Length: 420
Image 1: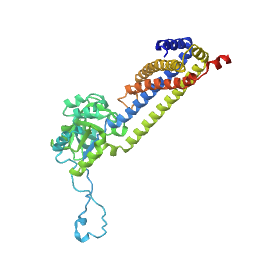
Image 2 (image 1 turned 30 degrees about the vertical axis):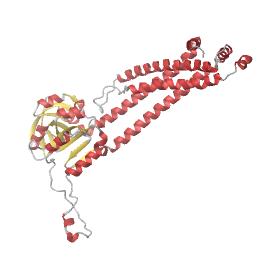
Image 3 (image 1 turned 60 degrees about the horizontal axis):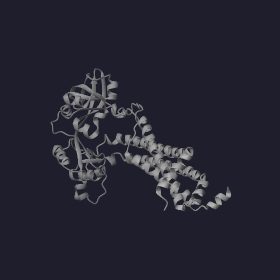
Image 4 (image 1 turned 90 degrees about the vertical axis):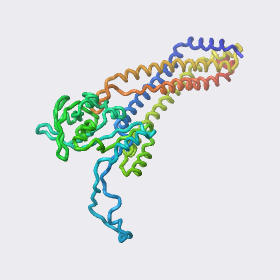
């Protein structure tokens, strides 16, 4: 067997003797891998942003007491009409309150469930915002601010003020950006909020909330849990909604069904509430991976063509090596070694190039009223992309060097020299 050091020296000599061709081959790898890193980082970052807009603000399970007609009407309870065809018109909802009975014990029970990451109670009320002669219909939600900030990134959507400002104030309100604009209100101003029962409560604007959805920002505001209960004239045990965040979102449908059956409450899981979300996520991911794989395949064929031409141009060197006693396997090792070095160097430079460009994109300003919390373009710096990139660079260049070098291994040096 020829000494491996000799093979490495010949490999290095071949690379530097035709530095231009070697550089072009390495650049092919560099731009292929670099473009892959840039594309997949940006596309997955964008997908993560769009998914986060739903996941950050939507509970995995939303529990409430829905007012609806009874499933079984009185006439159906009479044995006299058991086998009759009953037609009932103008069915009225059963008399019930919006509050969740025994809400506090239910919250404790849910918090003790190992599947549950956290639980947030809410008190929701339809209101009228009053400021002088201006009257606007809207909705106020009483929340536990700290839990909302922890579980649903609530603080990210406060564009003026902070969650702590609302916690410190018993008569404060985080006003929706649309409401604040229409009523010309800012932090420190005061307004009155009235409920359907006629109660009026003066509140101070402690911050501005902007979700990025105009339909929400034009009606929705937030107050402390106790403030909402006071607004409705209810006690501290009055809860109208319970939002549950799980460790594993996939467990939400089964758990929601169990809550509905065992407690007689309405429990909506995130997949039922956002049926289009999962479909959109799947399609976007499919497009991302399809484009990424296509890009890598195109780069792979480009690398193969460059290395194939590089080996073809070195037929004379192959003839000389074989004529001086090198075996076909040694010749193959020399060219595979060249390909691997080109792949490794080009791949590493490609990763660096991809990281630099991705960092530049990540710092470019991106300002839109629809996404008030986003200041720059979203980029995903997942290390797996870089592992995939360098792995593909090495494998593709190995194959691109192996296939032509296999042909070079079987070349008869006499035919090459005779052809010259």
